[in-house]
Image 1 (tube, protein in one colour):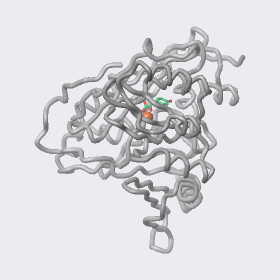
Image 2 (cartoon, protein in one colour):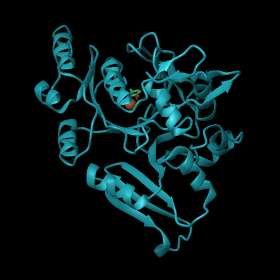
Image 3 (cartoon, protein in one colour):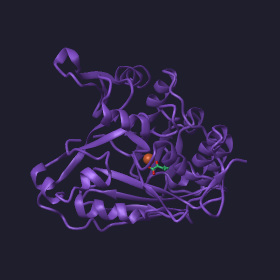
Image 4 (cartoon, helix red, strand yellow):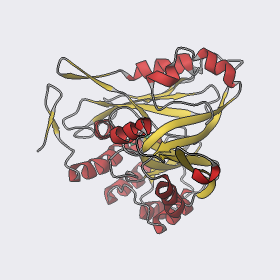
Length: 350
Ligand SMILES: O=C(O)C(=O)Cc1ccc(O)cc1
Ligand SMILES: [Fe+2]
């Protein structure tokens, strides 16, 4: 892992304040919004639809604290744009909106159409919530799968959004027996908006990142991290409401206890409660983070959610990647997708 201190140039205009909201395009916005209310404790915030004079699209907006999600669906048969999106991607995040200062300036800087073309789901400047990933579009060239380097996407963020590299991890540092991952996290100057850009790296089997790319039909938001100041209460409530999470084996907590004996950091929370709830811990000498990941929140193995609590630690849980990815790979195997990769880039079932 590498952390970076150079925040780049401080720009006088076009400051990014925070995430504002996420917009999901889904088949049935009413039911999708209801899932977030009943299973995650969100509350209805706004609605547009036939009753409000919106003849073509319906949106249900839900809110929890500062987190705002918009679920949008087409109302009429033959809506080609939304229909094609749904056929290709399934339910997913269409738009990530940021709250900014001086929107006009940013639109001018981005006149080359980055927002509208390069990453098609990225469409507005308004915006919200936090950790999610952008995957890289794979391109097939002469039979081989070519994955655009993360730095291509990173460059776009640096040039167009005035973001800088915040953190990174490469595939040599991060692999399970089967798969590997490269991750570059970009952030705004104030580091209030952070976005990991992840890509699959060559491993023995199809990586979970590649599984996402194939089922989503390209690059997109893979997971959304929601920050909390009390993860224990949050996860107790979510589990009670029937939310399903990825779980790591008992050995994870045995190893964690051993590692903590040699660490300067003191975990305030009761480790046995964290263990009971299967909350993951990552730390360095100065602080730690607590995090947990849900199972995919739709039938396609694409978008999932993360709940995270930080205690003076700005990492992304690299110390948990191996255990977490092994848990994800077990589910991937159950889906018949932990396939062996052959040298020419195709994959075959076991
Ligand atoms: O990079 C992040 O934001 C993480 O929280 C770590 C991570 C990366 C990839 C995954 O499939 C699951 C978790
Ligand atoms: Fe994350």
